[in-house]
Image (tube, rainbow, N blue to C red):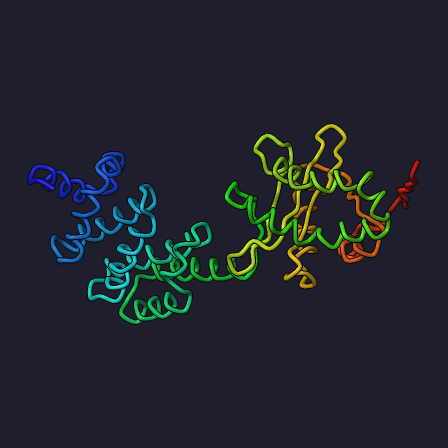
Length: 311
């Protein structure tokens, strides 16, 4: 970075949040990132300017490419500053590390950089060295919230979840399709049911498309998506419907499906639905699903039988 650009950078750090020109920071990207790293590593400038430099570094990690490489540098610097002598820098570094911890939910490649145990230890050391009440409350509330989310939470499906949802669907429905084949026999199954089973993957892709009319929610356990449920509410009839849903067999029997259905019902109520519906099979392979639906309050039912014969 030349002298003129460096003077511009120092001026920006002086006026941070007045506001700083983040658009220009991001445009200059690599040279600004490298200059900020040098400022922080060499302890140049005032504590306030270095705290602002750390904030800017964190922002550049969010907005630019080379996520893992840049985040590795950011976390190395923040880990050193969070247990340093200057309180202002400790507080900013702690906030940065907590934010990075949260980002791991959406960027699996970052999980290798900072474990919950390491972050907790760093935050305890920072607190012992001294934090303001505001910073301490924010940091621990954020850490505890994100730690709880790692154990279990439900969120909207994202485009990046597509392959994982397909893996869950395939694993969950493999025994169901095998049951259908067993009940119908190979010949009738191939003629009457196989094509419908085969297009289920396409149906799932359609459900998570932005304009599908469905909301798809995923259950996350320890940062891994383990189940999903599709939900739709008709605004005219006020009927809510649970559509395609599944829990990975490795996580079956732990209440994941029930919690997904309860979440789906809450979503329907918030959308104004007056009644909820769901369809499921009556064969043995759907027994667990029927129990989960009943546990979620689905008791009124119309029994149905699908009959087939060769011609």
